[in-house]
Figure 1 (cartoon, rainbow, N blue to C red):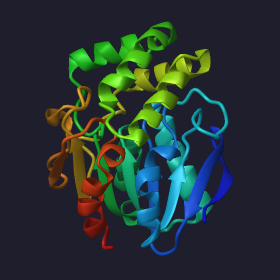
Figure 2 (figure 1 turned 45 degrees about the vertical axis):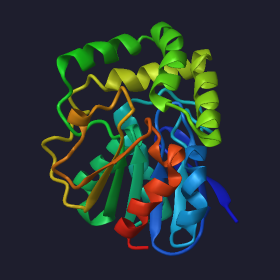
Figure 3 (figure 1 turned 90 degrees about the vertical axis):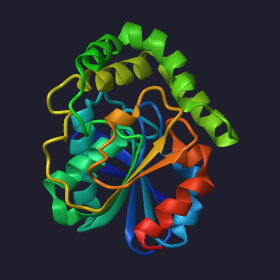
Length: 254
């Protein structure tokens, strides 16, 4: 049985869904996605943990917003404070991994474990990625490119993948969705989207869907912990939930 709530943040009301009981595990999704990305693993996680899935501002059922990537990380701190999470584990995908990593750097005692799935923001961004990010950071460009980029990075193979892809593509085609995507992508070129010099002491598991054309192996924070490769695209826990849980559950102590 899941329960949903709206939490006040500096970017408006943020929608969260909770299920299960035990040590908290917070789920953080990618740009233009929502908390339903985690549906293929949420029930299994909830058998061991209090699972908290977040819709980022401008996503899912949260208030409309045009958040930067660093604002997402700020909002995570607001959610943590509102829920009274003195310590929790975090599973973050893409920008969700960056937000979780920044929280671990700023509040070491608040993060027990990090599961970073096709993460961004942990290495210094190469110049060509900054140029591409600024280009996609133009709303008109994002509206044209993102509906093509989503299928390319999803590499959909499951029903869940196809549902995720359809939702993200539909959002990308709207003016508001294009503005959200552009706002976040512009942040990928900013200096504060770089955790490479941050001290992160929480145990970390890096999961990489190696078919993802956006997050390449050299972009992974390999010094933080072991890298588990899955034969998937960007949302590995949807494409291969069993493979993901086989490594994530023992790491989290289930």
